[in-house]
Image (cartoon, rainbow, N blue to C red; front, side, top):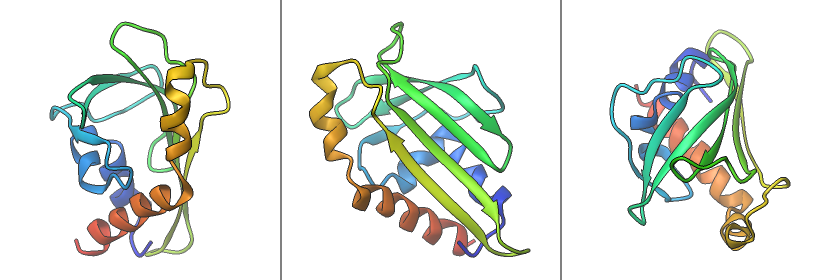
Length: 136
């Protein structure tokens, strides 16, 4: 992407911004003031069905990497993981890698939805994110 890692990461690590670039079209809204700053934090998101998800941050390096595991409120995450990795290429370009890993998913009810999260949906998130940061 034609942007610095800090610019891109600001949109990823702020849950209130995530519905703007969600290529999976699953995120409805998140309250402001939940900007992620480290491992162990939990941010809440309303998905398009109206349900709440608590996202447990399991990896974090400012402007470089963030990953979380979603769960229903008050429950342990069932094992799927969303990860973003940012690598500066030069002073104005950043390589952005977005992965969804459901290999550890333990909730059979979620497998169909996990399978529906295809590479083109991950790419759509990358594309939408690029439009936002490159337009700033």
